[in-house]
Length: 438
Image 1: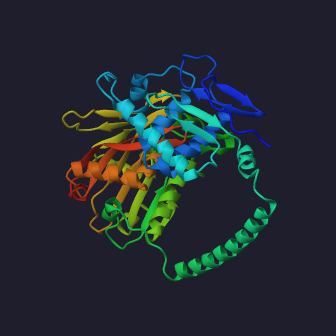
Image 2 (image 1 turned 60 degrees about the vertical axis):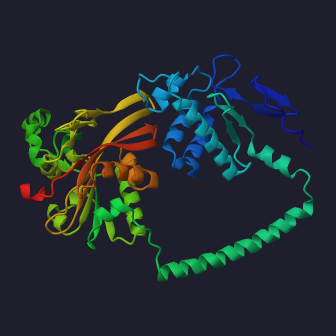
Image 3 (image 1 turned 90 degrees about the vertical axis):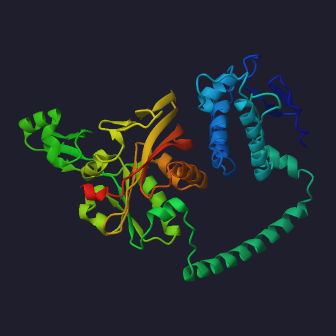
């Protein structure tokens, strides 16, 4: 028979009848508080990506920051400037931002544990009046044994029989639902942004870029020059030109699609298909340029992987610099607007990255083009495929006067491969005469 759970104290560890409860605290006042094992990072990721936190990117960022700084001295100023993106002039004496966000995080954690019950092994808490994270880990098997230690044996037989009956009912319902979906597929209602893009009944194609490599197979040389997006331009590259003088003209090699680009393309395809759209994916190397007139087009990635975009992007205000995917520049900055938006690296695994969303005017053939440009496409899809992201986009769009065609700079805070938050920072209208200027 197991002993009851020990009382958690501020001494860090307390043992009771073979059961260990651990407490760590992000404070420098006691050297006995240690950073938790790295294996718990996956549990933190599960909390951050749960339904409770998915709609609250600021809370996700704060949670991850506090977890990463357990065992370290942290201040309200550090939280404000490093986790919440506040200005370096932030003054905790006059600004209660951190205290407000900590209180909201405390509420979010309560909501998470109310949703998961007692089954989640990692328990987090923020004591009142503190911004230091407490944690307690209770192995799942210990939890189960302690919960069912006094349950009669026949209870499990009854539960098992009831469970089998429930499974049979669920299988029957699933078969019926499947049959109903075959007759009347479920369609999601599209938000305003997607309604604006899908203005016609024409199909939509998602173009996933294939990086362009120039190759001399006989010499086992494959080169990608970021300044070359068309095969015919290879002589303009000093490196490629010198190799061409030595070994002759290179061969075109486009043999793969990036994993991030393909993942983003598949997510868009699944989302649009749920809305009843006729949509398919295609690689940029197999995409006929003249098909823009026949269908709506979504282009993903970097312009340098598809040279036919350059002529269009020469007429937009926001653009990615030729060899640097981490800088978005503005040709004509407005009052108070920066001339460029650069990637900001906060740590080896955390950064703020810019990207561009461009909705071009309807073509004369009544089709539209959507350009999603940037190095991290996950951040763009996080905005366009979630309710919170679309709400922020809609607010920025309204602020710009809701033009039918526009271009927008967005920024995303990324922790490793997880997007913590995405938000638009600038929006510009695009002239309806865009296509007449070609």
